[in-house]
Length: 197
Image (cartoon, rainbow, N blue to C red; front, side, top):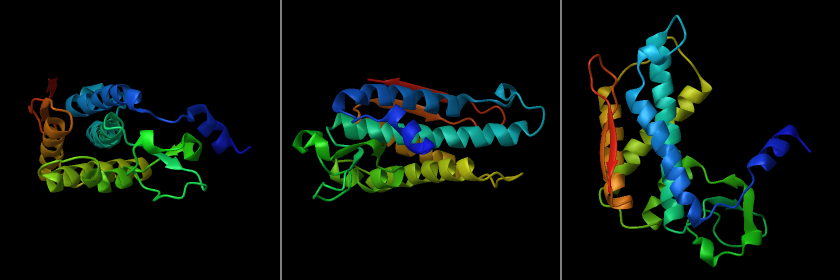
């Protein structure tokens, strides 16, 4: 057994509807930290701003992926990938209750990109284009910050406002909840992450 397989086995599990609440809770932790993280929270003596912003972007992406998975699970959709024996379309469009669980791969789940692209199949989400845009920004932040590091990053305020509005819309229509979300990026900008039923 390879070391990768050994570690994957530690996480192997078929995810079910009951897991949605936990995924959402952990997602909200990452999103709250991303909104509020300050330079003073970074222990490094150099590059505090760069490291803070990098961590914010990573956490936005991680929180987004977990929230997407919570949404799929809440609606009864399978987020695990399938075994070779599965004869249907190998995408996140299948209800867990309709599947033979022997055809579900407990070692792997669908990628964030597959989940974003499959949102149209899960339920009615008004302003889907807006949600997809913000989620794709968060996904790209996570992917880039997780794989490369540069001494500078060009700041585009609209990236963060697009992420914020996508989450507000997603909470309203995907969870029937009200979200107030402001990612503090500029000096003296007040961070907010507050969810109401």
